[in-house]
Image 1 (cartoon, rainbow, N blue to C red):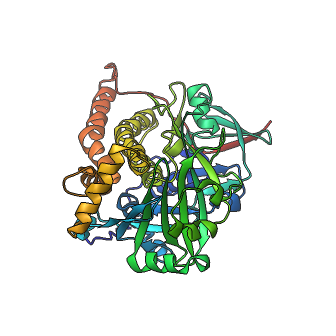
Image 2 (image 1 turned 60 degrees about the vertical axis):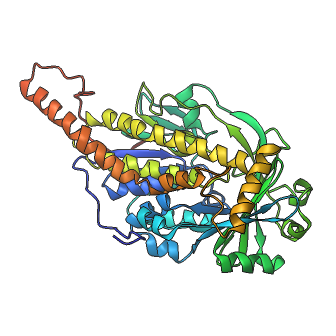
Length: 470
């Protein structure tokens, strides 16, 4: 198979289509909707904002473990028409502007992943997923704010008073959304880390030299500092540079979707002189607090059919590479499992299988993303050792994230994370456990009087999304 897998044949279709109501129409919700429609289930997505607000500004990075999924779904051409391919990371010091070295992505490693490392705007990715989901038959309602969720009755209430129900409720409305609150029984605001991400764009016309260099190098620019860091990369071709500044958190709250209100120069006061042009050209930024949220023991409600995906299940630090990827992986795995649905009694089994398959993967990757933030913003002896090791490798013409030194293991972690194929993992679960479970249930049903611990429900019902007005 080629490095840029373009497998887009119609996947296995369920023989028992059911209805999914997805709460939240962001990237996680749309990816989940598209994946479920591709295997034949009925899907309604509810998004409280209008489409333009939901699209959002800013940049997003698509690592190989994410891009390969979208390639599998037939979106390769759409992605490559908008995205740029990144081949390297460029590192420097935040305060001085001194160059630390670069790391070129290994071509053979990327080929093994069957994906590509892409950079694009959030709005472009949103439009691609929305158009594909609707084309496959998903329904998406904007301005539909969910104010109450009843997992046991499999119902939600909208701000308008309208009641909607489905066979499975999917919470994709983020860490502060009603779905996570409904499952926990309380609102989880997380623990502040003292850092925030200031997310914005810099029009390339204000920084032509920077934009040209990023374009020529096909690179992501990273600056390490004492409690501060910058990540920047070109989007919209070469028209804009996505700019994410890690710095002190100056407020009590802050999240994606807020109105841009922060003047970047006021936050980036210690930045190197050679980087000040980049800062001065930046539009007002959205401040997103970097918070640590508890790991949920369960992503599935124990009193009904509510399952969490994306940030609702596992909030990632903002601005990192893998947050978006994990949300799309969630949708891909959920759909793969439910492609095998043949009776209602399997629904609970598949929901818990989804949780089992995803939790360990997400916890490991999220820990790595927090480690990356602290790696970039480190101070003292740890930062000095990191910089010295990178400079030494650069002087020898080596990639700065591999080999001995403070960055030891970082590159190998990338290889493991990028090479993961979540859809293959779901297929393996079905072969190793799902089919066995079905045989056991089949034997139990043939015996009639033989109980089975694997038989979650003997009930069957006609499947459809129902709507009723209060």
